[in-house]
Length: 510
Image: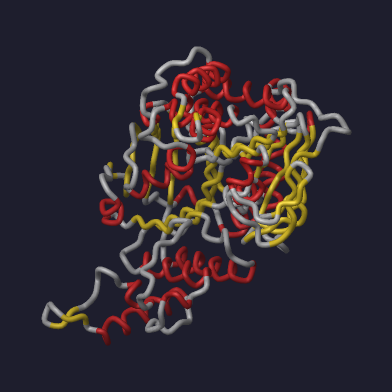
C-alpha cells in the first residue's frame, strides 16, 4: 500500500566521515506523504548523522537527496526548511522568558506599520496553531509553564505551521510518561491525515510498532532493511537490528574471566540515585572489568559520574575501598585511588593548550616538588616518559600541545596520567569513541592489563560490539535503572540489544 504513494523525500547512497571515522557508509531512506516511517538502529548506527544531513545541518560526502524526485543540495538548515523539511530535536531549544505565542511565531511576527508587533494578531494566530495540533493552552502564558509533553506538542505545532511536508521527530517520548505519549501519538495521526511524511526516530520499539507504517534499519552506517511494518513485533525489530550470529559473538571474546569469590570489593553503591537514575546497587571487585550498557539516555554516564564523585548523588550510599563516602568529589576520589576518564576527553579530561608532559604530570606534581615550591623538571620528565612508554610504547612529542594529538593518542596520554597516581579503580566513559581501530585495540589491551594487575575497572559504552570481548560481566541500564546482568559467554551483541530494547519499552505497552 505505502509503496504506491510517490515519495516526497528520498536519500540514497549517503556517505559521511568525521576525521577518518565513517559515520554513514551507504544509507538510504524513502519518506512518503501521510506515512510515518521509523528509523531505528543500535547506538552509533548513524541515525543522528543522517538526520543532520536531511536537516541541512551536516553536509554529505556522497550520495543523492531528492525532493519530489528532483535533486536537492542543502547547504544550511534554511535550505531544508525551504523545501518543507522540519526537525524536532531530542533536546528542545525554546525561548525561555517568552510567551508560547512568541515562541511559536518567532521571526514571523505581524507588525503594525512595519515597526510594532501586532500583539492581538500574534495571539490569535498562535491560538489557532495550537488548537490545530490539539494543544489546550493559553498562548499568552510563559513557555516555562509547559510540561515536557506540552513543549513537544508546541514544537510540533510550530513546525507544521511553516509549510511542513516532512517532520523528523528525534526521540520525542524519551522523557514522557505513558499518558503523555498518547498525546504525541494523536499528533502523529493528525499529521498523517494532513499528508505530512513523518520520520520517527526512537529506541522505544513498541511505539515504533504502534505509530509507524514503514521502517528503515541502520547498522554501522548502512541501511540494512527497509519495508512495511505491517505485523512486525518488538522481537522482530530487535532481530532486524541485531542480526549477529552466536559464533561471531563468541569469536570476539578475549580472556574475560570472573574474579575470585574472595576478591576485594573496591567500590560499592547501595540504592544510589540522582535525577532520572534511581536506586542502583552494584559492586566492583578487584581484578574484574564490568561493563555498563544501555541505550542513549539510559543513564549510563549519569551513574558512572556518581560512582566516581564527579556528581553528588541525591540519595543512597557509596563506599570506596571499604570506607563510606559522605561528601564525594573528584578530589576525594583521586585521594581514594579512583581514576575517571570521561567521554569528552578534549573538554573534560585534558588541557588542550598545555603540553602532553604537563597534562600527564598534573595530578602527580606533589611527587616532583622540592621544598614544596619548585618542580624538579628532570624527575618529572623521566616519570612522564616512562608512564607514556608503559601505555603507548616509545614516548614522543611530550612537549607538543595536547590539542595536536589524535583522539587515540590523547586517550593513551590520559590513561598514562592516571596510572602515575597508582589507582585501584578505573572508570571509563566511552573509552574508544572516535579513535581508529589500532588505537581501540591498544586501549582494550591496556584495560585488560589493569584488571590483571588487580584493579577494578568499569566501562560505560554504547558499543555493543566492544563489550562482549572486553568485559567479565555487563550491567544493562534502561530508563535510569539496572534491568539485567550478563556474565561471561552470555555477553553477546544479540543479548545486549535484546535486553536493552525490551526493557526500554514503556510500562504497559506489552
